[in-house]
Image (cartoon, rainbow, N blue to C red; front, side):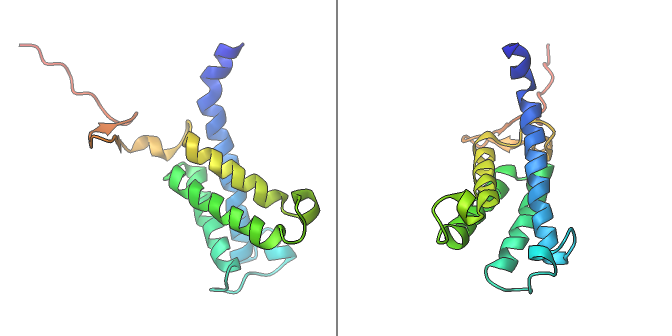
Length: 152
């Protein structure tokens, strides 16, 4: 059983990334464009206002990048930081526990994105289409093609 689960792990991680990124992007779209019920039950966040508008931009862009699996680790780090800020600045002063202060979504998004910083995009991400560089500057990763062996 565990062998099958281990083989499915990259796909489960990829699905997790897609769902979390999509849900996060929906929050940003709601705040910026008033879709899906709008910001806080209706309307939009005024452009340029701190911190709401900037948070909404991070949610839309970061969530989209994470869902696509493009620049996943960096987008997830910025998104996690924005949710940590939201939790400690907006929710935590009301009460210590997320259930009491309404900060469950901020806390869950923060930890979910932090997990993606360490795990990467998993399967099905666009990150896999681009070669990455290792510490020596050589290309590595699944997108790297090996040169054919030449025999003389």
